[in-house]
Length: 525
Image (tube, rainbow, N blue to C red; front, side, top):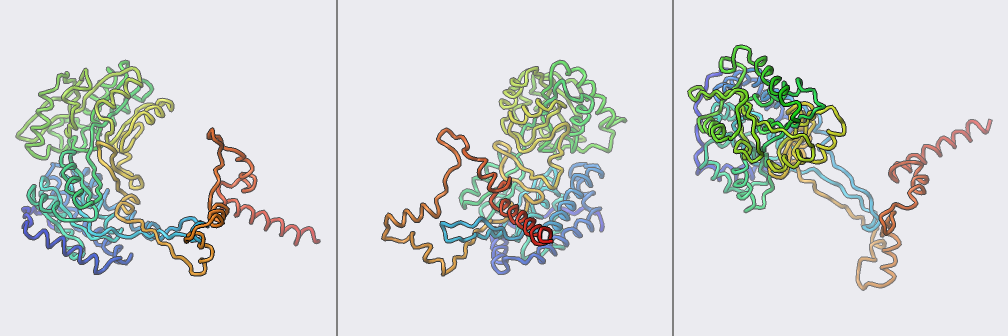
């Protein structure tokens, strides 16, 4: 398909209410959408991406000067691989689940149905303008919802291609696009949705959450954060430097999960800085700006924000520092700072600059991390010492963690992606995407013949009814008043070592079958 770029046409604001109403009408007319219908929509979306690959690459280059290889790896393949993973597993993930049978309610066994939530709103971001709208859309479709998609107006070329794909390849009664900027987004947020998935800054995330609260609408907020990369004496310094250097320069630093600062042991500082310099030189051997392998800042606003951070820092620029506003170019930059309160560490940089702090003591390092951002989207731990790994894991909170690398927990389609605390809440990707957009609805079917067993629940209440309840339904604890487990070996013996009653019964059945076989076929001869 032609890669010729088209202008982004805003959606008329007055059309938005009827668009949302149409999506709700379609949901109620067809829900629950049959699994085969959902799969067909996902297959169509796959071919929409495949047929428009050339246009997607061109659009990402226009919006971000994103290199073609990065466009394929971090956008196109990320989406198509997740889509195929969803298709592969959807039958299994959508099956009803069954709870435990309980005597207190007449031996009823609950059925947990995975039902669609309704109309979903997806608001994307400019830095990964394809992935951050289509990845959650995959989950919304798989779960049987309708959806309104709002691509980022700051990546207009990609928004045009996403619009083309949705309008040509998906059922337009169920999936619609709204394009535009602040006014259109405000108009969208006035409408009622059943769930909102937003990716962006904490400032805008709070606006989205406030609008959602008026309708009691649950949200997924993916907000980023200032992510630490901790490098101890026991790390492979050369490899840590290479991976951090790559992760900070990827997409010109416009990655919410990228390492935002380095916290290293003073004894490895010089080696680490030297190796980062070598890594950036190896990544861009002909010079960074002359290279076609690094993206640019998305627009002048993004450029000037990062520029002001560099101007305000009290730190020392160790590497990089060159800027060219006419080219929206900022060189990957390493800045040595002396304090966790440096202006460079007050907010997410969202550019190819990274601060460097030193700390010899891991306990003080953990305090520094909490001071800068207690709940970042990611924590990166570089050490080969298992005790250090565990200490840093247990002493930090974050959306995800990668040890001895960066960004890998985000890249795995089988791992849920999302934040905690300041970096947002909720998650998606793979099965988490399906789970994010379903309501787990409990259903109990009560048999009429159970009425005698349920008689104790009806007034007039008597001591006999309470005694019956206690004898049939009240569970006794397996621990004493000091919290110590008592007679655990008895239950273990009765269950023949099984961890549950069900496992114990299975082992008893197997043992009795073996004994029966021996008595009937062996001992009788």
